[in-house]
Image (cartoon, rainbow, N blue to C red; front, side, top):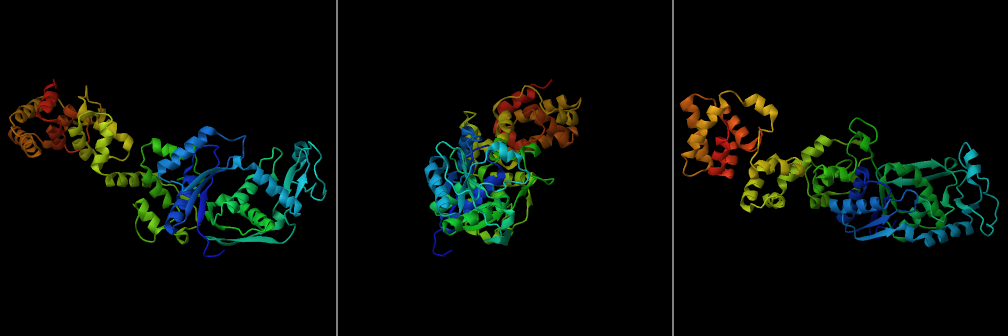
Length: 451
């Protein structure tokens, strides 16, 4: 392939189900590669399997790609709108002797034990009016077909292992093999980056390119993503779709960052990277062929790291969607940001800042920290806090220390019950910061409620 050819890559999913994280990684690699070299990333919807076509799956697919930030330069192109093109291509192969009409019925095919027996290969006749048929490719009976994979090297397949695959079905819809080859040629695809499950199909595609007299794109088959304990990653073994992780509260750029590192390395020790940093570092040479396990704990950590990188104003804006107190939203956002692992935690973690807890909701913390002396201790600190004129972190801490010293109370025996009384939970940001945020009157009110 000429070096002067512009890079054009595609993501070509079938709208039959959810966007699997493996498919998302394929889209990410195509996107990063195109952006890294100033190429084009286009979207093609391979919707010729009408029995499995799902309109909701298509809508979800487009939504999830946009959520990930993988904006395509061209498309989406729909194969179902290009049937005439595929029909002409299949007929072209018949005319050139590289394909043939097959009139075998479904009933006959079901009786065959070892794949199609090439019964119609040498009939050399055209279909009669209204006669049902498929068009099959005339695969070579001997020799080998080889191609170069950019990360796996030379791959050879004996032609005797290849069947006479169907190109055009009885309903005049193309199979994946024909439509994919025709589209990649017509859409000037320079590189095909796809999952390694397609390695066995690539020799068939190479033969099709040769039959048409077209130059094949460069191939790069990506490593499989395994479940943590081994085996295929699936919903049965936990979250497996982009939608799952979005609903769990992951940030899109954290998921993109994590998936990009499942099979690729920037060449240094960096792990937490922005999209621009990944684009600048990306190259196909740094993709490795070995299968890689999906580590959800690592993804959780990475999500937390990306949360820390967001401005405080982002969290404040999220809180403003729930609560009206803009000033408090800004303060609470600053306090909670370092503690968040998921965005979905924000409403529950922030609730006691804006609404008085009716009771202690943390049973474990209550059993651990609340004692018979706790109500009396709460009265002592309430009295001391009431004396403060300037209600700030320094003076709040001084009040707690004074009560502890004068009454021989350990700080934990005073502070933890006070946190339970004010917040209703046993963990969170620093207690002094919480009290300052709530304000003197609100803190005294919540402490005085304790019997």
